[in-house]
Length: 129
Image (tube, rainbow, N blue to C red):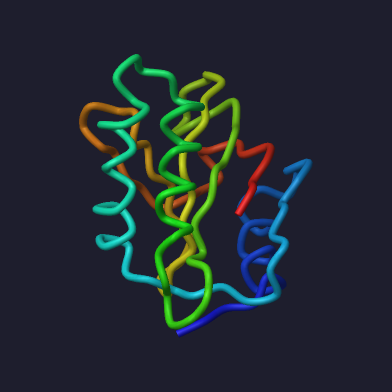
């Protein structure tokens, strides 16, 4: 399965109309299974996440996952920076995945490895995919 950058941007704009940057440089992205993306991304906790730096962990996860092949395309996986997550006000960087069932936010830096479906309770400002 695949999705165009236009489709992915539209889904994100619907959730976060005030996002200042949705950078998706490829025309098409592969839609991989969320669990397999998370398994690949979890290696970033071991490599870059020992100090709890959300930026380092999200960047490392992004780099690891984007090496994966998703039906010959780069996976629809990236980094998202925002100032509200699940209703709680805080500046934070997480990973973001676009799958067949929608937009998911993945907090690899969280010891509980929290994953949730993106919503209006999150205020995402920047996405790099």
